Length: 159
Image (cartoon, rainbow, N blue to C red; front, top):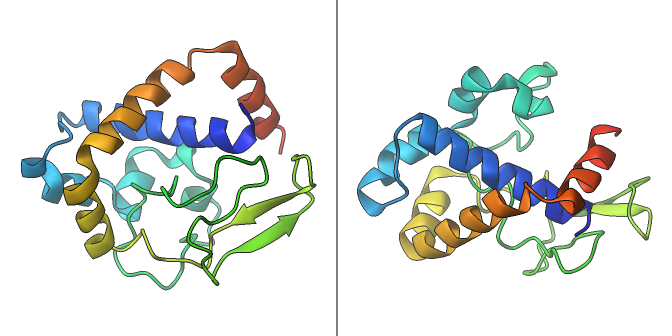
């Protein structure tokens, strides 16, 4: 496991916990309620500690998206096969940031891409991939219990 994988597991586990807190099962009927619960404004009020963008005063990570959804912050198009990350669909909106604790010293940032953060894209993803997301969340719930995960998250917390 590397840093990007650990971060992804943490995000998916938090989303799973939040849905449980709200009594929302991940199913087709609940998609409208899930979309509302995963809005930047909603999550930043419920769990301000879970993202620096909720509390640093600068606002959204993806600034040009109306009704920004945080559900797919751990984007399904993010390349987790390498520790520096990347975009599986080769988005022209991503950039590599230097000075990262990866084997190459850089990490892929999607902050200029909005493909999977607007409500219509998230709704479409959920309708087509509910079972995949359920599986990923279950995997994340198990991964966050491992020593390997805890070691990588400790590195992340030092950044």
